[in-house]
Length: 360
Image 1: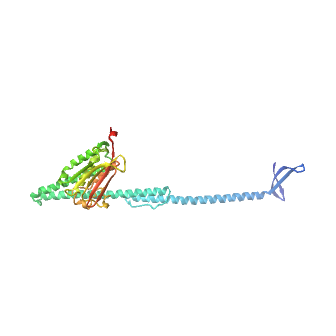
Image 2 (image 1 turned 90 degrees about the vertical axis):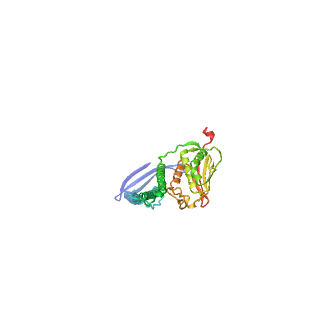
Image 3 (image 1 turned 135 degrees about the horizontal axis):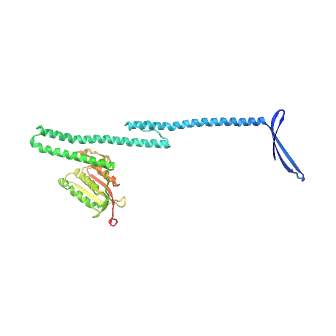
């Protein structure tokens, strides 16, 4: 059993704890043993005060360290957020070149990287917008200046009467160019904003190519060009918007005609696309002036015209290939070009094939 008691000795208060147990001797006698432990109460109080003191010191140190850590982490969190806020304000004012230098690997770092990507995209859009406005202004100003100058020359007698027909023909061509520019701009804007929806149907791509060649027969004959059409099969059905794909074909064939010298050759082919099953690849090749490799990625940009093409493409405005690429992208297909200066160019695009038994 346990027994607690207190008594005074020499004026001090002591705490006594006793315990008893039975002890059996080897001789067979049993003894009851009682052990008492004594300790001054003052020592217990001192130990309790020491424990309490260490507890307060530890708690104070923990609170102090916690405040320091919270302050450090708050600075680490707030400083990047302040940078993002300031950068957002500058971008809102049109300073799109602002970038964040935050390289942490946490959520704030991921936010900063996303912010920088957004800023880069906005900067590209702004540069495209400025370039677009500049190009449109240039393309509109040139024909309008020509039209105004020739008409004023006819009205004030500067241009003699025998040349009126010649200059009025130029005015007509410039008006056609303006009309084509406006229509192409409207179509391109509708495509990029998603206002034009493609009507997917099954159609014979070979028959569509025949119709496109017939529509351009006059300009082909005018330059005495040889057009070779090679079909792997007589009837090849594909899925797409037939009107939009016809526009792609006419644009590519028209470009081939423009940049091929008189007496040259254009080859149009359809074949199975070897890299992807159930796809047809259509190619339009010419043996014209060709392009440098540095130009191949830029020809899809709006208003882009190489120095070589400017001398041969008097009426073009540089929107045709941008429209072609948008149409093919809307179909979820690929388009690319291979070219070499002086040897011509070949444009390729793919379409999903529809087999006859599946159509039936």
